[in-house]
Amino acid sequence: MILGDYRIEIIPDSEFRLDGGAMFGVVPRVVWERVSPPDEFNRIRLQMNCVFIETPTEKILLETGIGEKWTEKQLNMYGIFRTKPFTETLFEKTNCRPEDITLVINTHLHFDHAGGNTLIADLESRRPKIDDRRPVAQFPKARYFVSKSEFEYAGNPSERDRASYLSENWQPLIDAEQLELKADFYEAVEGLTLQTIRGHSETMQTWKLERGGEILYGFADLIPTTAHLALPWIMGYDLFPTETLKFKKEILPQAVEENWMCLFYHDFHTQLCRLREIDGKIKPFTD
Image (cartoon, rainbow, N blue to C red; front, side, top):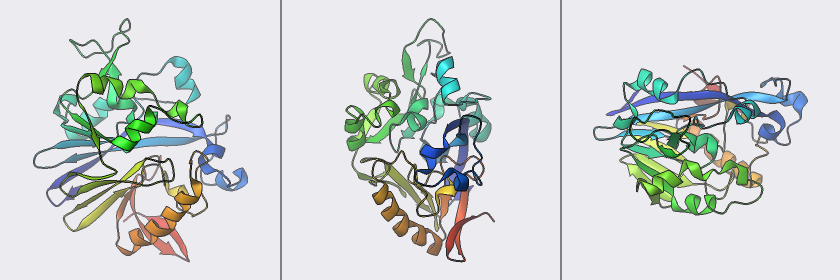
């Protein structure tokens, strides 16, 4: 996809699964299972849809997925079904290798958004090595951007979301002097802005790309899938669900009116679409 002088590609990471009740909060299972059928462990299929943006001067990754540093026990717990390394998919979609990426942006540092920031590798060959568990930056020449507020929170999270923050996903970036801390609102490159929106957490950011007369918007975890477009369908994981609701009431009519393309980071089937209001309900529309 081309927006003005920018090239955009969706880079799916891997399938994983989370508890359906946690993903849909107060919505009863008898309702949500119609659109997201659960497995025998009550988990629903999800995806990590990272975004590659090529500008005249930068090759950017928005989010890096869940990463490949998991134990067998963790793979089973989260239902991670990886068919190929993330960097292989990246190359197939963009013809870029890890060393070609110049900028990595994380909306927040939860493991399913920042897990691919690093990998366990031998420092010389950068290939996975069983007897060396030291994580290093997966994108060795990239600057990594995250908001200062999110970084500070990640270092001292609450008991409720502590398990989502793993320092192995950012500490190696500090050691390599690749991590840059940003404001609650900032422009990463021309036309691409990040803004902190309270809801899923205190410090998560959404992103907006304005280029070539089009707007591409990433909700991150505030609206993780198209099934969450309905106003009361809010994740149980959200720390501030009433503020997520407020955000949805404000942003969704604007997205419809201005015909935004919307990126749903965790949607397994519909990663990118526009929105339409049909019979009083906002629904995904793919043309």
